[in-house]
Amino acid sequence: MGTLEVKMGSAALIFVCGLIGGLLPLRFDESERSKRFLAVGNGFAGGIFLGAGLLHMLADAQENFTSVLPGYPVALVIAGGGFLAVLFLEMVALRGREDVGSVPGAKNSFYPFLLMIVLSVHSLIAGMALGLEGSVAASFAMLVAIVAHKGSAALALGVSLKLAGFSRSRMLAMVVLFSCMTPIGVLGGFAFSQALEGQTALLVEAIFDAVAAGSFVYVAVLDIIQEAFAEKVDLGMKFTVLSVGFFGMALLALWT
Image (cartoon, rainbow, N blue to C red; front, side, top):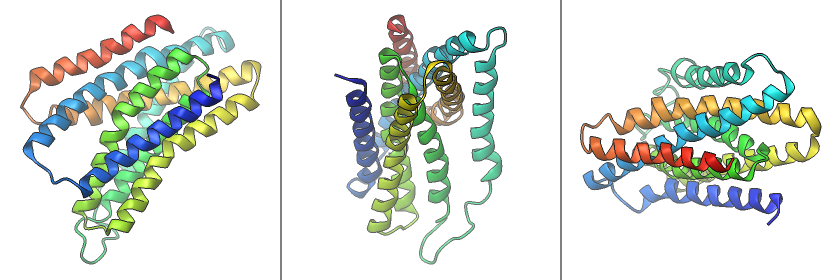
């Protein structure tokens, strides 16, 4: 199977996961059992995101930067910048605007748009990094991490849309748009990888890997893991699946 087929298959799989997760709230009501299951699943996704960001993307970025710009930890600086960029977007630029632009009949109706913007920016960056990645093993690690979280992120978006009172058609349109963001990034990154050559290609891939690594660590620690452990139930199980996710990524790194 060629690189194009792998990238196209990844994009299609990610789109389907986002679509299923985002539309589930139309079929099921919230229950305590489903909340606990999602929290444990988030712990696993958090471990995968943390491992993929630190052990695959950041490692690949540092390796590529070393061959182009040796002697300085460029990848670490850019990853830190990616972390801070997502922090600024989520906690500073868009903070406190949940009630702005509310529409009649909907409660807190701006929040779903806020959530979609934050999730979409991260999804696009992650997709670009996956599309640019030249290593099959590292691409697989990114795909596992993205798929593990895409469904739960889409589910969170779908729940917020439903609670805000959005119509079925508007909810469907927003979920489809969000589901498209990562595949767009994957295909865009792959197009860039085909157009670039030599050190330029390595440099662009390293930059996107480093930015994605920073955003993955942010999402893993401050979004997924923090949310998973907010409810003081099943803590041992959550920690166990988180560790399995992280060390699973470490095991996969043996083949990169």
